[in-house]
Image 1 (cartoon, helix red, strand yellow):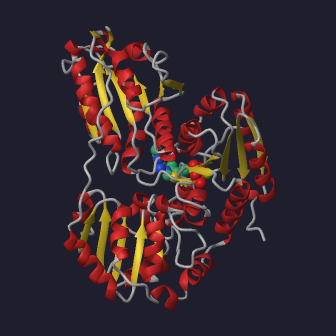
Image 2 (cartoon, rainbow, N blue to C red; image 1 turned 180 degrees about the vertical axis):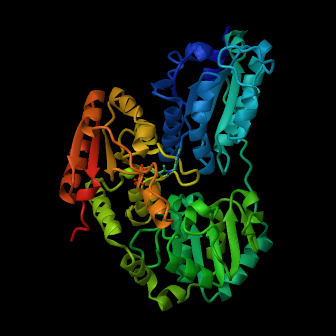
Image 3 (cartoon, rainbow, N blue to C red; image 1 turned 120 degrees about the horizontal axis):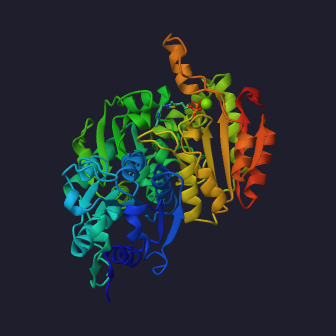
Length: 533
Ligand SMILES: Cc1ncc(C[n+]2csc(CCOP(=O)(O)OP(=O)(O)O)c2C)c(N)n1
Ligand SMILES: [Mg+2]
């Protein structure tokens, strides 16, 4: 059967479980659109390619299934790159398929429509894999590599570009399902033995768990109980252990008492975390005086700026289990130090009035969110505190643009997440300025009839930057912005709107929003918020 390469590419996606595409069609990628309906691949029209990237990111973060984004050449690609860099830094899988101008023009600078000097080179600096297909066979071979990169132990976004004249060529190649070729990394027994020997005599062990351990909650729980040691998570690892487990210090890496505790540990076990600056926020690197046992699926981590005294390459579940099985339970540091409660009290004791007002608002959102509800947060002061203080009942319920830290993530990522999992309660939490980066995707949420509360923490400022300027005695410049009338903005899009100034009204507004079939923009007037009781 003969059809265009564009159709063939879509058939390959469908045969390999990609069922949703976020995108914006243009004359350069028309042929990618021809086969969508026949293959029953859903297309979601976004309002900006950056929205397509964030939506595909949110889709994968919540469902674990990768989605694709289709872009035109040139501006379509440059627009999506910020979202791709965010996904790369947080190890989120998404596939971008872009057109390029006709093959004969590539690299020649004829000035054709949507021309970039070197489109693939640009993509290669941001994606994990970036390939150019010059034929139907290339599409098949490169897509195999791209999809493997999405499904690797540490997934990365992948990129395939196809010249628009190649997309229109005919092919009879059959669309096949690719074999799962993900290699299983091994940790030599000698290294497991070394880790067990260290932990068996450790006096002050501590575990730090990140997003790479999200699926290993049961194994972590057993190891924490066996060693009787404290556990700290990154924001991406939030909820791995029940928030009120006596050993769970929560996502508290940015706080001094926890950094001191880690510095005092004689053995640190890190599992599925980069321990990067964006996990710690208040320091470039943790100070360690003890030995570091590092469990990671990405072997590159063993030789980074921390190094690993005992590297354990592999999946978090398997490695944690093999260590735990060989240790005997004992009373340890957690019991001696009084458990997590005393550290949490120290952290809370240092919160100022502003932080306590933020806590009050976070509590209201939490109260209105169903138990398995999910929050997609932006780069805003309420989310920086929420990274630690928003209580989640399980892993994968609080998502933050941790690694790259880009504004504009929350709304489109929540849109993608809700589309991936319509039965889950999904909420977006953004600042007044950050929301405006991608507010166009409110129209997408209306069009898709997504039941989605969008909570906007309106402090009428680029709040964090204002505070940083103030602290550095820099004259306040460019940090007080005029905002739109958020209610009118919502209504102009056909979304519902609410404006609240206290915890009770916020909780009520979020509950009502979950009962609506479309999105609700909830403006929270920060100046009216008090620390609460
Ligand atoms: C794409 C991008 N541009 C600039 C920044 C720098 N930045 C970080 S937070 C921030 C202010 C955001 O203001 P708002 O969304 O209102 O949140 P607030 O700090 O007031 O809670 C800025 C400009 C960024 N993180 N990402
Ligand atoms: Mg603000």
